[in-house]
Amino acid sequence: MTHAQFDPAARQQLAIAAVEAKTRKDLTWRQIADTAGYSEAFVTAALLGQHALPAPAAEAVAELLGLGADAALLLQTIPTRGSIPGGVPTDPTIYRFYEMLQVYGTTLKALVHEKFGDGIISAINFRLDVQKVADPEGGERAVITLDGKYLPTKPF
Image (cartoon, rainbow, N blue to C red):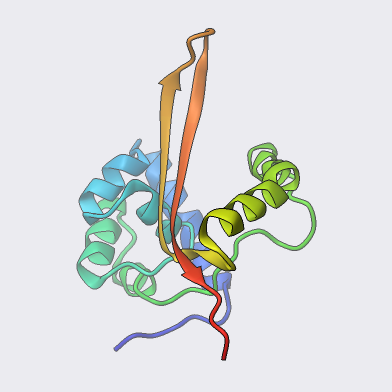
């Protein structure tokens, strides 16, 4: 049976335990995702309290991290999503994404509406990928792909 969480506290505590176990065992998110059999972004989000994992994946991840049967069960519950408390984020990395949307949010909206019409880009039927690439001018660049299904607004 599918169960839902309505208090994010349990998943937040599990996220803390998962990150501590990941650090203690010197694992990467990729290694954990490979164990689960799902994408690195999806499994990372699940362990940070934003998605439910199917039972076999939850059990494999809990075993890998040494979290136990209760954690495996909790990883299968539908969480209360949204990990950023109200207000402007203070973590520098998260703030930069906030800043990007402050600068480019209206541009993204205008371009999506011009190309697709009135509607939204789904965050449910969605894929996320993060790649590190060399910058021809020196250093490195982050290539972040947000791939969401377009959902048109439907009059009713």
